[in-house]
Image (cartoon, rainbow, N blue to C red):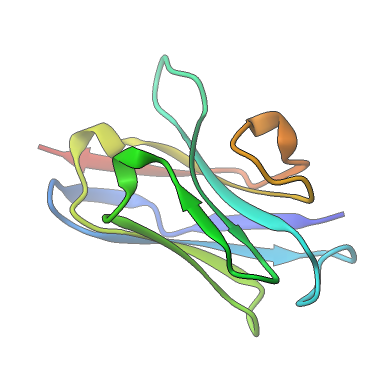
Length: 125
């Protein structure tokens, strides 16, 4: 079992920055775990959308085109925490952001077994 808790959401103006954190815990998770850690987001009335993924052991990362150059996913091994640094935020980035963990990787939500509760990010124009 892996337990994920997101923090760091909030309301910022367009052009601003936020950093989301996702703390991982549980018997199945450790610094040697080969989990893919992913951020998804879901805007009102829209499907859940892949944003970025990081492979815990190799630090491999991948982003959707709309956030490349603005968002950075990273991890702190000692804290078992994944971050999503978001810069140059746009109103269209407004959504509930979810952290997810899985062993398969990929960009589909069904490929991730464990999910956090989500954190709201709102960007005002």
